[in-house]
Image (cartoon, rainbow, N blue to C red; front, side, top):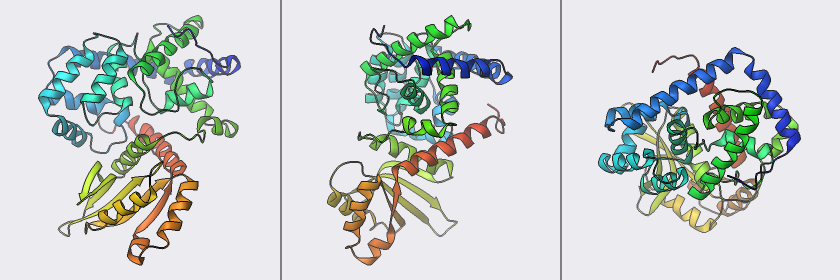
Length: 352
């Protein structure tokens, strides 16, 4: 239990009002039905012997990968990165319910490549919805707005201990929903509540500064993963942490193959901290790969200004190949594409 659970009472009251209005419509009933069906699906997978087919079906089902254009390709890459025997062994440990959800979440992230916090916590939530919640952007935004204390909602990747604290916090939130006479309230139901609150507060311009605070904390992995998802949604082949040339490992690469003419590549480097000189040297090495068309540097406005001054003194071919993308712009792009992806998913153009 989170004994330090504190929140803004007025905002929680407003959030419950948002949710009450939503719960009176058909979208709420559809949302509850979908979550119940998803719980049945994931719990069935957890009880079966994992194989490449049902693993791929599980990956395709995750909300956390809905922006990936080719989900089968993503599943294949995860299997390739980890080896299926290792993947099956770690998945079995994840779903065994031995130890806290936080302990199993942390072990899985440490031992399996290709999974992010939202993916792992989504699996846990569907398998044991009474004790595990989903750590994703929507939950973090809502907890931020509700001014919940003690939860590190500014972090993308939390520790196992922090995940257990988050779950305790969701249990405390669930009690308010039970008091409002909602039935069968578990932590996936709380996720529906947080999802709706997040959608409502983004409609108010005065709340946006609260939702996206400009705080100095490392966002490297989060932004890297979002850039990868944006590229996948746009139809590019995407790789993260890719060795693209001798001595040049880049955060993200988008690649498109053009008939029999070869490929074009776009390189992305996220610079939230670290040496600007090292960044430039790495990009210069990356440019030696003949497929590279553009080198995109991602950072905040202050850092980008400093980096641009350094690059202005570089050779012309490097200057012309380099461009800049503000972190806030990346996040806005991601959120907008996420809304588009969510809307298109509702059309059921591809049946499960």
